[in-house]
Structure formats: structure tokens, C-alpha cells
Length: 111
Image 1 (cartoon, rainbow, N blue to C red):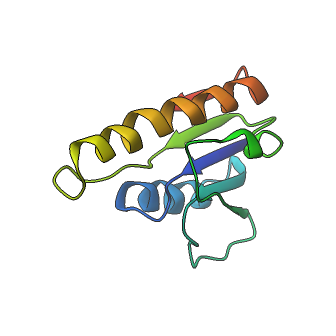
Image 2 (image 1 turned 90 degrees about the vertical axis):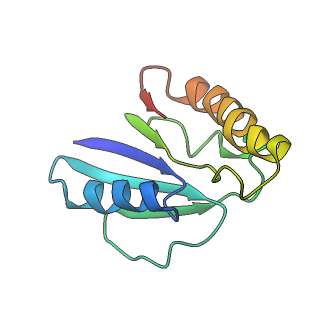
């Protein structure tokens, strides 16, 4: 049984990943971390709100012991400035991966 973490499940890609993961019998638990509430309820699902991905150190405990992460947090090109796009796409991802790796060093990370 797998423990799967999905970041950005309120978006299009993350939403598909979430629905697919919840339907899989070999996925025991799905942890969703995002900036907004999902509005989804499921026995396998635990939701954590984290509004500021510039610092993910507060997530250390919940990121510990995961088997895999699917990272779908992002922004559309043209919807934000180039600087904001880089911050969301690169800086947030690197910060999250840093904390995730320290708590789940053998986990798989999908971006």
C-alpha cells in the first residue's frame, strides 16, 4: 500500500492526479497539500493547507514517511509576470523538494 502526496490538486493536472490516485486500490492514503481548499471528501484523503511555498519547513512532519509525491503546483505562462512564474515554477518547487527529501529520502518525486 502506497502513501501518495499531491501538491496542487486544485489545478487541472493535479485534479486529474488526485481523482486517479483515490481510485487506485494500492494507494492507501493520499495527502493533498495546496494553497486553497479542495472541496473534495474521500476516506483516503487528508488535506493540508499551506499558503506560502517560499518556506515549507512547517510541512516537515506531514512530509515524513511518504512513498511518492506528484508536484503539480504551477501557473500558466502569461497569467503572471515572468518573475512570478519563475518563483512559482522554480523557487517553490526547489523549496518543497528540499523539505520533502529530508523527511522522505527514499520517496519518488514527480514534477
